[in-house]
Amino acid sequence: MTRNLDLEFVNLTKRYGDTVAVDAVSYHFAAGTYACLLGPSGCGKSSTLRMIAGHESVSDGSILLGNRDISDLPPAKRGTAMMFQNYALFPHLSVIENVAFSLKMQGKDASERKRRATEMLELVDMVLLKDRLPAQLSGGQQQRAALARALITKPEVLLLDEPLSALDPFLRIRMRAELRRLQRDLGITFIHVTHGQDEALALADEIVVMNDARIEQAGKTRAVFEAPQTAFVARFLGSHNVIALAEGVVAIRADALRINTPETARIRGSVTNIEYQGTHVALTAKVDGDQEVTALLSDKDFFGAPKNLGEAIGLDWEAEAAHALAG
Amino acid sequence: MTDSIATSAATVPSQESKHRSANTSGWLLASPLALVLAVFLVAPIVMIIAVSFWGATEWTIYPAFQFDNYEFLLSSDVTYRVFVNTLKYAAITWVFTLLIGFTVAYFLAFHVRSLTWQIALFLLCTIPFWTSNIIRMISWIPFLGRNGLANSALLSWGVIDEPLEWLLFSDFSVILAFVHLYTLFMVVPIFNTMMRIDKSLIEAAADAGASGWQTLWHVIVPLTKPGIMIGTIFVIALVMGDFITVRFMSGSQSANVGRMIQNDISLLQYPSAAATAVVLLCTVLLMIGILLRFVDIRKEL
Image (cartoon, rainbow over all chains, first blue to last red; front, top):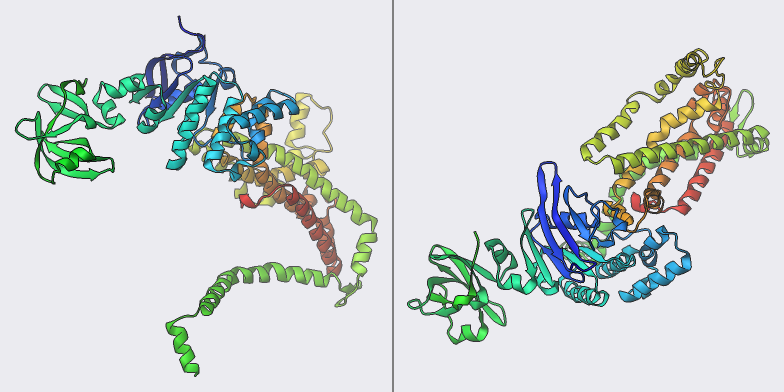
């Protein structure tokens, strides 16, 4: 039933002394998925990634790739390749030598090394810069070189450790598109660690939200965003309000809220902040129980019936927009 | 008129005067070090070079400008033998200090995980430096002597039948002492360079399927080269200029350039000693110049 190159965690655990960094995590990634491990720093996502790569030993449980237990294999024998956060290019080698490094270690001859490394550099559009040293490259170029170096080993799973965090915002969006294109073209599994929810939403087929060494919620990106199960997930993914109501705690998307007259609305509050965002206006109100709620209104809606600071308003939503949260 | 210029300069400092004051403060800032170097480095060398052209008889030294000292030095067979011997000491010492120094630094930098232990072990390496060079050197003598600890131990274990003569007052003991004294000068710069190697490079090498030796040879050694070069310069300069170790450890049976100079000085033949010193200085500078062609150490400094 399980296809050959699926990646699976079975009770995967990492302990450092008494601290548990990853606590009995189980999950199954179908082959060819672009998955993001998302969470705040210290949630265990990087440890998980490093265990898959083989740079961190597995304390308990196992990692399966294509039904093969890879937990104790050396990094190069796992069928995974890692792209490091700081790219970890060898500073004394040129781009092409960096890319061909693993072939050199295998004892391949110079002409084959050159041919295959050039192919990889074509894939990431870096052929012209092949003789540069890493220090002579920009951040984006270093990242392409690191990608080529990781992909030349023909991995079944590519592991990316916060790959975009060192880039400026403009380049980040461009590289995002590029990563997505590469993954589609190669058809291999990408596991991408990030703490940025916008990055995860933009890239991933599946997201795994981690918190406190556990998986808080995982699944198809849209399913998770549409229906967060815990307050943590709702807050971490952003664009959600977590509101404690009489019937329990619910998550409601900021753009699902409507402004109404205080008398007829589900909840009442007073406007505390109005932020103009171009296409939208974010209106924050303090509602019963001293809670802050943000409604994202289209500019037309807001300026059709503008509100002022301190004004009493009512907030309304469709019944199905509210998702009850566990805890 | 002078007044008006002065006021205008004071109220609106011209571009030029601003530039000049920046220039002046630059010179002022550099001057203390320049002065120290001039008095303690340049002046003595100039003096030695000057004296190397002086003349000498058995009982006098007289200022002159003649090449007699160099002529005698460079036409003497002894000079070449002593220089070759000195280079031999330097080369062998270099090989051993490099091997030991690299290994120790590698262990400290990559195998000792916690910073506390790294610092503790590193300080341990420096403990021998709490005593003087001479004491560390002389302490070998009772150990290596004919009836010393080494020989009596080997005899009692039945490894040898009669005491080894070459343990003390030989090239062996000289090089042993050099290696003992100067290995730390190799450890420190190599350790320093290794600590700056990003650990993720080692992981990246492992990811690429490199074995431990391959990682060592293709990643760590190339990245440690500047440190190796600095250590090499230390060791070569120290061994080439040494005279006391050779004197004590060879029992005055071997010679190096330092001893040749020392001999001349004890005979009050300053011009000849100065000429030898100038030739030695040129040799060492030449060697360092050649070494620096291979590795750029500037980024390390």
